[in-house]
Image 1: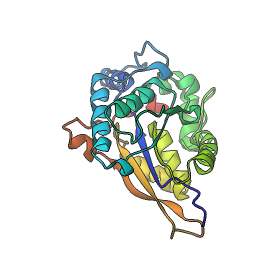
Image 2: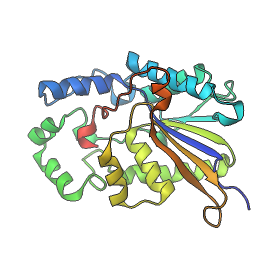
Image 3: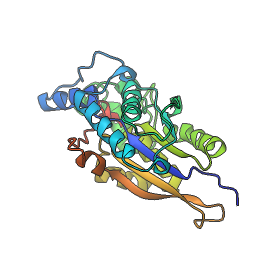
Image 4: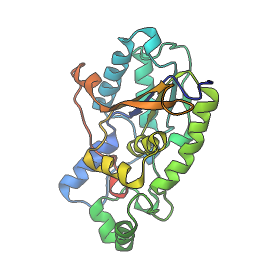
Length: 254
């Protein structure tokens, strides 16, 4: 039987970003807008986010060479690229001389007109969008100029084709965003809308939290990737790096 999937797949949310910090400050102050000077795609890691990414890189580095990722794929957003660089620089890849691949299909969910608004801001400025989201649910609600979860899933389907065609038998690490992690779970495990939203409601994904799959030849007629860990934070705790799980700056629309 031909193997159609990577032998191992790790999906990681980026480290804490300056946007996470700004969102917390806006919520605490009861503001309608999140004070971020940069475009969402240019928001960097915070100092703590770099510490988290370095801790995760050391966790990978402490594994045997054949247990570490060979290929690294990252969202083009700065916080994901910086997380990837810190992991690689800490020795987290088995072949550190290989450049990681930036793939725009892994980018953050786009929020359109709701970008940089807190939940309070959305309800004040776009009450009709708050009502549409309540009626449709966030799986299907698409704000003007933005994306629904379904839109994110559509672009990730082609990413999985790339993994199957070009990385079968490989060990792949993906660094992206909270919604991307959840949508990849939806696709890889064949979940329903209700199932993935229930998982989402239980807890936010930790910054640098690890979701881990392994290929199992006995799962289905062609084998499948089987979930081993989800939102795994022991790599941070073992390195004394604080665990944070704040939603991204635009999470009111997430």
